[in-house]
Image (cartoon, rainbow, N blue to C red):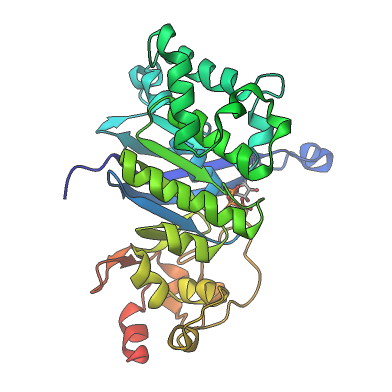
Length: 333
Ligand SMILES: Nc1ncnc2c1ncn2[C@@H]1O[C@H](COP(=O)(O)OP(=O)(O)OP(=O)(O)O)[C@@H](O)[C@H]1O
């Protein structure tokens, strides 16, 4: 396998929580939201990695760390072997071009007073992608690339539908010729039919431009459709990672099995092999010790509350972090 484009090692991020007046009077210690508790993963060139997990498990925080919108409190992220948070790398503006993030609501990130053509031209100029004389032709190419009509260049963002605005956001991200696209709930606010169009557009663009994509989403069917590999996150840790089809067909970690059972499946064999997710997600202010999932897990044993399970390789090629993988695998035979 080639060198990874992106390598994340033991990434941690704790946010200090604002103290209430009574806390200040009592001089209570500052509390921390442990959003990421040791995430390790790699991204290979040209792959799409889907990231799934319940709300609040740290998906967006992970995405924001990769584009340096959040600074981790521990661990590292290497892009082509270089630590992106090292002081010399922080000054490297080319990183901001090579790793682009796209958000759920493009309306808030597109300047309402600029036409689509001006938005794309600005991205091309700021990052000096092409000579000034080539900008109009490049804008026209970008509109073609995301399948928007040429007259879109003269219109303001409010003239477009939600799906079209996402196409503009994708065109702007592509304008600067990135290597990695981070899509955080990119299509969540769109109608189902429009979601499929945007996801298919991303698949097409990825194949044409050899992009690497991190796709964060709640919709498990979309994640399955678009991803080569999938990482399942629980309370800031990866509990299972592997090839998308294998993981969706045959999840191993009790959390993956429960999470994926919430996804509608047309295949009765998949429906039969699942468990239900019990209880609420514990607060990231108070992550349970040992395996963070043990308080909700039907397979828990005393070891689970005492010892954090490491990600261990599975026979299927993926990896799962559970002390009881072997028994669970045996049960499923
Ligand atoms: N700036 C911040 N300050 C304090 N806490 C934060 C901050 N950003 C995120 N958090 C907390 O970190 C945890 C992880 O949040 P994050 O947004 O990464 O989760 P998520 O999995 O993306 O959730 P969702 O699917 O709802 O977007 C949550 O408990 C959240 O409240």
